[in-house]
Structures are given as structure tokens and as C-alpha cells.
Amino acid sequence: MSDRHATLLTVVPSVMPTTDQLLCIHHLKSNIYQHLRTLLGAHEWPPFQDMFWDMFRATLFFARFPSTRAYLAEEIYPSRQQWAHAHTFFKFTCGVRTNGRVESENRVTKALGNSSTSPFQLFTGLNERTNGQSVQEMIKLRDSSRRQHPGQLETLFAGVLQLVRAHGGPFAVQQCYKQMELSLFFMTEVLQLPEGVRSWNMINSFTNEDAYLGLEWLLRLIIGRGHQILHLLRVTHRASGRQHMLAILEDNNYVCDCAMGMNLGIPCRHYFQVLMYVRDLRFHLGVIRRR
Image (cartoon, rainbow, N blue to C red; front, side, top):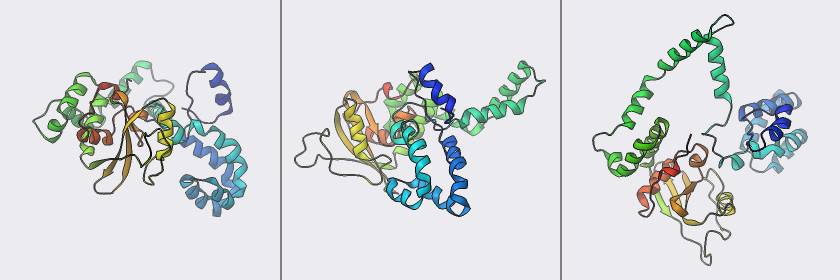
């Protein structure tokens, strides 16, 4: 994960050809600011930002801001596979979208020491900082990691929790438990194939405006990678009505348009909702990515 520095863009593909180089969204925003803020002026900059981050098709956008076309179309858009969510959501990055975490840790390290600080003193300071982090999070992690008195989650996901606690790391246990809690606020509906369509491999004739990713793009990606879609389900939040599409694949694998399972490597709340709904779906540890 890096910015669009010319040296990195040139060197990384040749030095590390098998490594996916993704562009930091924070730095991408800074690049756009440096190149276009002065060009647009103080009056046009705020509406430009609002329209840019909401843009779906660029025709109307460039009609409104024609002076930005050269930079955005020639510099930013060609590298979209390294930063656009539609191209990066299926890559396992532990959920990282920016390199801000690394830089924030560097700032903390600098704050703990100076040129006269010894490695031992820095090590001690880092340990003290780690030990002083959120007590509430540690309590929640402890509670989710150990077997509790029978409750709703312990009953609904008894087998899953047993497997995750036995073989998953602390982060996986905590996140799975959290997603199980949130899954109770959703309901699931199986989508039927349209008349005349024999499988989901054929072109679909419907779209979902509330989906995080377009359904057509999601299906194209799944099918393009050689997977077979056994069932397609709509998972809806009971209160907000927010909808997500989840495809059940062969071998009890799945793909959800929220992309949490692929990007973060932890099953999402929509998956756990479907796990309660679909009797033939079996949980396995393969849906939790190794770290």
C-alpha cells in the first residue's frame, strides 16, 4: 500500500512482480488536491469534492468540471485497478484501505523516543503503551473467546463458535462473534431465477440500487473465476431496509457484495444470517483467511 510516487510506480512491478501494489485512498485524495485545488479555485473546490466521491459515470461530472479531465482521465483513472473498490474488494488486504495505520504507528514511535533513546527504552515504552490500550476491548475479547452460559448466540451458532474458538486467533474470534450478533438484525430471501434463465451464469436482468457493489459486476467476477453459483440470496436489514446480495458457491463457499469476507478475511454478518437460514450450508474454517 503506497502513494502514487513515480519511483514506486516504476520500481515495484519490476522488483516485486508478484506483489499487488494498491494505492492509499488518503494519499490519492492528497494527489488530487495538489493538482486540482488551485486549478478549480476556492469556489469550485467544495462542489467538486462532493460530486467526485459520489460519481458513478463521468460524463456529467466532466461537463461540470471540464478543466479536471486531463489529470483525472490520464493520471488517476488508468490506475483504477489499484485503488477502485470494484477492483480491490476481492483482494485479501486484512481490510486495509490506507497506509495511515503504519504512519500513525511511526508517529507514536517517534513520540516515545528521540535521538538519545536506546532500543531498550523504546521497547519498554512500546510495551507500556500496548498494555495500556483499551480495557473494554480486552474484556469483550475475553468474553467472546470463552464459552459462556447458553444464550441466543451460543445456541444458534454452537458448532461454529466451538470451531472458531478452538482454531481461530483472537481477532478472528472477536470479529466473528461481533458479526454473529449483528446478523440477528437481518432477514434472508432466496432469489429465484427469472423465467427462461437456466443458471446465474446467464445475463441477469435486474439490478439492486442499494448494493455496495453492482450485482451484475459481482456475478461477472464470480463466473469469470470459474465458480458455480448454487443460490443467490438477498439479505435485508430489518430496520433500515438496506439490502445485500450473497451468492453461495460450491464447497460451502460464498461471496457477499459487502466484500468483508474477501477483503478482511472474516465472515460477514450477512453470511451468518444466511447460515441460520440455509440448512444445507455448512460452516468451515476456510472462510476465515490465514494471517
